[in-house]
View 1 (cartoon, rainbow, N blue to C red):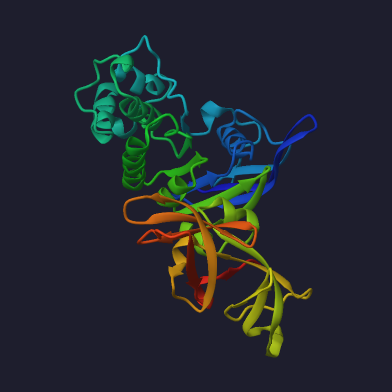
View 2: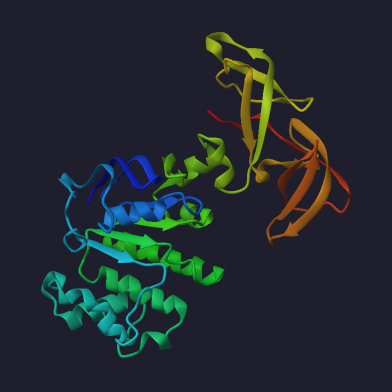
Length: 348
């Protein structure tokens, strides 16, 4: 099913939770809404589920408007952050709960459908257990199976991994992605975890203050952010405000332009010349190399964090903090690092 949000806004009195949101989720796509707390991602999910109605704009499933359509008639499966399992029911009864209101797909009986789903979420033979006897990860799998039982056209997941430890969260998100791909169900996933969004999604929509900042494939968002917010929110980044020194070429492009940041000159790859002679560029921590790169800086070492395959080093340079990722941590108070012009991305 294809999902369309057309200039959707949601206001609660004077507070705007979602503002003029336009986006399309393609049939069978794993689409993630990511952003800080209060950015409007859960409100958007509630609008899709039918728990809230847009103040303005339209929501369409395929070509059908969802205006006035109640949640139970939308063909939506929802997995909550809190699991919301019924403690007085067995695992099998929880999974089969939605089948009280609709027939199981494919001509299966309720018991057959429940057994099929428990197998799908890797919980075979656990139907007679009580949810309280399961681990957090197992409970989340039960919640997923319950949402999938009626064979929904759209699966909505509201921060389903937030209560789990990091290692289990990483494993379960891979499982959810595999299940989604196997079933081909259109999925909208909400998370505040940037790494999670980048890892599981076909496309990601970044929200800030109820507005859509950018939507695209994870790799494109990470490598080519279109705003300072996206550059700083998705993973660590070093953002520089610079003055263009020279390099204006034909057609308004710079030919390997020199830019100046706090009295230091850097060389960037050709970019469109800004009319006011100023631009903002960013460099990811992994792009810096020790004692290498065309653009070099010498900075004070504040501290370092050993992360296994790499070390995150925090530097102080010209009154600001920088973060670089190095294979070998410096054991001195001062270090020289550099990056090449192609490693810098100029924000539009």
